[in-house]
Length: 310
Ligand code: SF4
Image 1 (tube, rainbow, N blue to C red):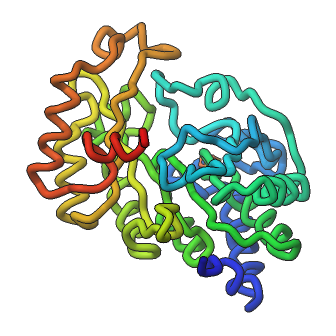
Image 2: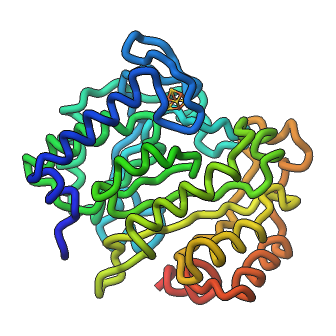
Image 3: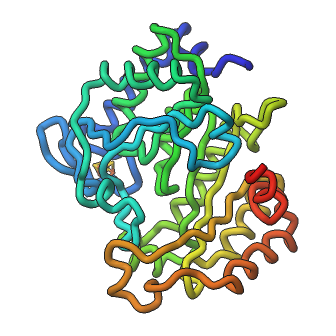
């Protein structure tokens, strides 16, 4: 396996400089597109309900992610508490909305990464990292000194600032963003982000510019690249076809796209009749067939599902 590029960045001293710049964006916080200017170091909460206190809800070798991340030893998942989106159907609402988690130090976070690596995990998978990214990269710096050398996965909701992403260039090996909506009206109504579609497109393009399409080693384990997730919501609340058109026309037809069918109403979804059911098989196949018809061919469909089973 090639060594991840963050190791080179650390040896050159550039990693420290990036950490400094990330903390500087957090001072009056502009880390994410909300740019809510919260003074988090003074104990104030941002729109993401976070101060500068690092909150983690779980650390584990996770086997429920996409097969190129899971391999045989699991993805070393670190699940951060809170979120910069407010999806009212959130499947992890206890963590993202109800703030379940524990305060940990940056040194403890570094140790956690090393423990997951020691367990044999194929990568370190930061789930919902956006609002804590300065502390996370700070911890990466400490962990590299102690031998961290597996790929880093940035697993996010897609509501990202390009300015922040540029500071992660050469640090993150695998970006795994959602593309949740292509309809701003719906992202506002169901996730509290009135410009989601405007924001997610340049963010995905920047991620792809940095690392390209998903590449795997001969054993099928992801080493570097972009893995896009798209969760189909009932009644086409997501605007799925426009999302897929964007991927083909502005990113790459060879993009790995996990088109997900597992939506279940959760949290406040039952207050909205249009969200209070699973998707139908027809809804699922309409999106899958469309993806195939425009040339997408990685990460979804019967063939991939069969590969995942065996
Ligand atoms: S990360 Fe949180 S505090 Fe910072 S701009 Fe976004 S919502 Fe505001």
